[in-house]
Image (cartoon, rainbow, N blue to C red; front, side, top):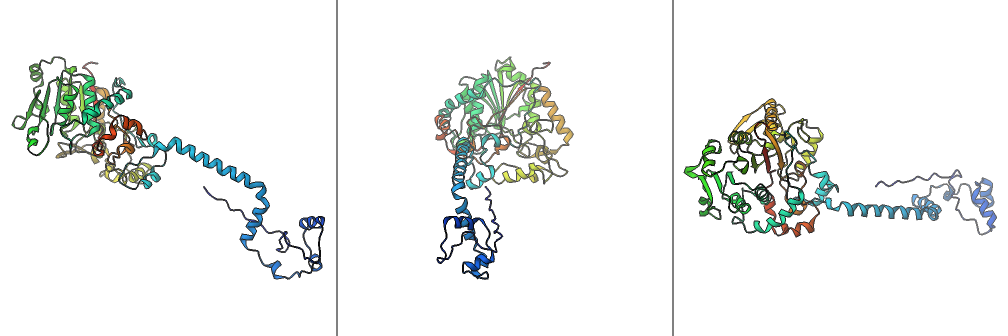
Length: 463
């Protein structure tokens, strides 16, 4: 708030203050004093009162603090009550604003929280999440998932104690809590007759699916068998799972799925759920799944534009014609300035220099379509990128990204940038709900693995 400093002009009386004292030799009446106060003094008046017109005390400019004191004493009895009331009113407004917006504090980084509040302000969750746009793949008929936020909240409370029993407590480089919950929730909701996973690592995802569907058979395709990790630490091997691992490994795209499903007695492909955590080009995996006739797909690492080791659905659908999609490579743009600031607070945030490759190629990762853990990459034109999006839209019935489980002020995660994410299931500031759901019992490190897990429902042929 700016402070307005007023200037008081001197009266046209030769520099004499109207509050000067009369000589004790010339007593004055109340009327004389009143008239003296209202009329200007002449040289004769000065001579009569025994005061010289050249007296230094009358011509010397008074100190500023005396002028201010005199001014305040003149107006104090009129304006001080108004000033006090105005200050009280401003204080009340501030307290009300603080009470209603205090949930907007997002202390979410290992960096100075004061600096974070200074940058993000008090707007909080609603203005922060999705602030840089969240590109959402468009479906053919605008269908949405059947479940609601209430279903997610209810399931969270049930899943926390299950997650606490996980055999692999430190699943470094694997799924954290957010995606574990997402996989468990969707598998339980869809109730498949068969679950297929491509990429099992130590077996944590296999364990999660087993908790969702205790009796459903699982097919796991993974280059290294999870039992190999048992020599170095915890791992999970499922008794009702068919493994194609090690020497028996077969890539998802090379499996004879018609024969495989027949062996498992599956005739309805709508009752099968695919889970991909193999860091392969998701467009490639999507086309392979569509060719085989599968309809329910879950991708664990749905990397944002400019990040990750493979071409993702999020990247494919990041298009200028889609709400929240498209980017500017102009270094002085608003987006560039916002990205530069956010890079200081979020580990996975991407600034414009990282986002844009030669020739302002921002799609994919600097114009690249990455594949196979970033081992196989190829440059694609924007037209190819655009056509990829149109293909996805032509076969898509439902696209749904799992929201973060809770806001960063609760989880204290500092990796993913909320400005590129949908609002969380448990909003920032909901501390009681966070604790009631049991989330407060978990180590904060389990919330650092969020990468926009996505569920796709493929339309039936001819629909």
